[in-house]
Image (tube, rainbow, N blue to C red; front, side):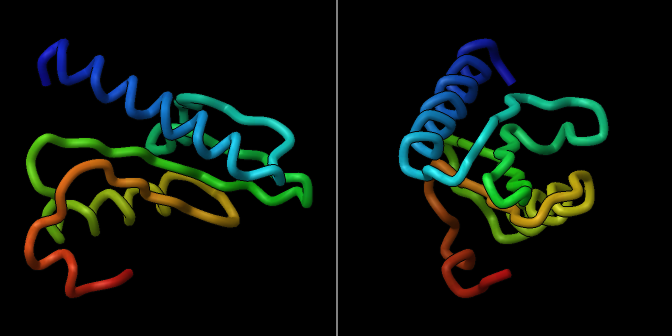
Length: 102
């Protein structure tokens, strides 16, 4: 990934974090880029009812394909112990993506 693509990814991630924080009033604290065992999560929201929401943001100028979306979702769920998971995709979806749900 080029430096320009990396910067774009961080900007998208920051905008998503701000949007999520402003639109959801349940959270008490947020961790950005937690690292360690939770490296697949870009954001972790700690909610007022003691639940934990793990969020991964992916962006691309290309189209997301079904197999890679499934891989991202599985990796997020398997790397972070949370009560809720969100995989947020910023970009176009491949033609086969619209025909499945996880």
